[in-house]
Length: 374
Image 1 (cartoon, rainbow, N blue to C red):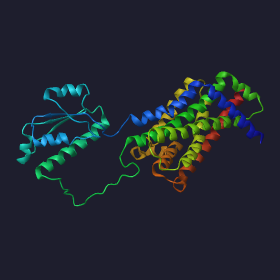
Image 2 (image 1 turned 135 degrees about the vertical axis):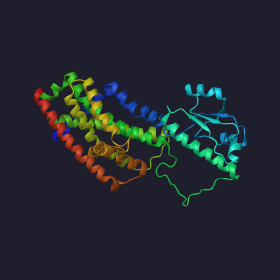
Image 3 (image 1 turned 30 degrees about the horizontal axis):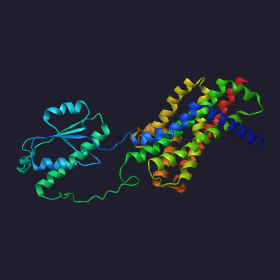
Image 4 (image 1 turned 180 degrees about the vertical axis):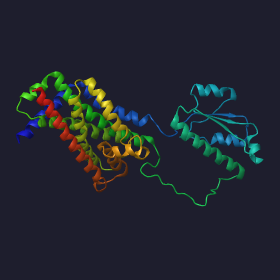
């Protein structure tokens, strides 16, 4: 019972230290508010209000129909320009797409020839350029078929495909990016806070005070785990409520309590990594460098940014052993697909087991460092 009391009071001391560290306190608030909002709103991966200019050298019914078919939300209202303005528009990034309809284009279509429309694409906006070019091709083909037949084109395929998009019907990037920003920040903040707690004790000289007290290294480390884990858990819950659901208006279809339980299980692993790095690093700059080497690859390769199927077989096998991969997997299953505990319990088990192993290794490392300092 005395061990639990020691862990509790050491944890409250850690919370008081964190509340007085205005840089870390502000960084946590920023990471789960403005950073989440910015990541959700900024990097759109679909064509949205793409700027289009048209060089209409045909001035026919077909060329005007093509211009009229470029509608929001995929494209902004097209601007008619002359051929001499194309290079300037592309060089100054004022237009992502420039269509050049040649003279007598409709006449060539009616005569059965295959005249070409030149489409200039600013590929520095890679996602919008790739997706938008595909949309343009479909729109132009549809208007040509409608002009030739006088009606909507019919499908020539022997099978009609009925495509149903699950979990994100409108294919909006915002729905994916907002939640993935929180998941990524959980990993980042857990490692930084736990590691910084060890470095802060060492730099302030309070680690020596703790070691001469009747405390075990396990109690010291466990107190830092629950205190920093509590900070991140509260921040995640508030971010889901205030930023995701209230500010962005993104509905969460799954169980938030189940997701929060998964976050707490994962924090044993992430904070253990932070404690381990804190015992290796001698200063905050060194901790930052170790964070880049350890945490960033875990975030990038966990499946949140790149699907595991797209990775080499060896790398995929290695990442299957990482709790961060299973954390991303069950977080997406809960929040996007509404999965229950009957579906995601294997991921919970893997995260808990591997997290427990890393926590034990971190305690051993912390005990060794503590013995050397005494």
